[in-house]
Length: 333
Picture 1: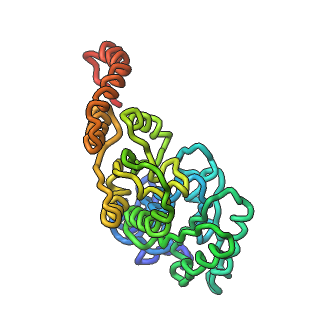
Picture 2: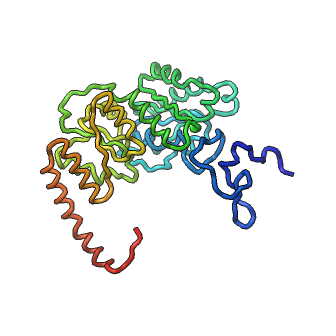
Picture 3: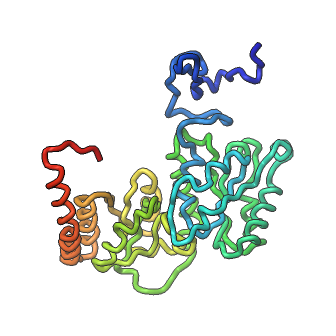
């Protein structure tokens, strides 16, 4: 006899597929393997795609290297946050540790605001070198109505550092994309423009929408610098909290991932008048074009051509070698 607790809830049937006899699978409503996508997930589901929390915590906020990354929710949500994406930086703090308020059944019944406040204070005291605390809301804490924004304000007054609360509960959207939006908007609202540094920013850029997965930035940062530009902020690969606070000073935003970061480029253009261009930083042709497009904004076209010619000359012997070895063959890359 099947226990009632083992039965699939009707509203979750479209999100679940079970393996059955013979290696085949059957969806929770009895119809094949296809799992419903591009529709809101019912809280409590495990899905094969990202949620709003995933897009905010995993993509946008998580790479910030000197912030305590604290999940407000059950321990299961925190599993997702432990180093699953290799956002490399010149410190491993953001990947080495994971923080969670560890909401249990009692907390769900009686509320988790006190536990969240305690978690922020304890984490901050344990790691005083952290420049801020990022708090990510999850499905369960949103459903019970915890006021994370208020807790963040209380915590800021106690620890004397920025506490940024992301309202990124997983059921808020149908994919990670809503989380990108929440992450961009929250960082822009709470951090960007909060410090006004002095100096000449006439030839400066932000690299927006690169998260330094497997150390991507080593392939292109030096090229922008070689044509005479200074990078103010990376959003958000290998970036610190203090860098985010001054990113509004850059003269141009160079947007690599238009899916996850055009939001902040649009907001900066509206508030600060910062122009932006869309580029692709992968591949020789695209990288060369990105350098040309960026250089054109600053009148550095000649410098860009020198750098492009020099870099292509370095690569040409390697290309020639493989072209010779692989002529007449089909290659899968």
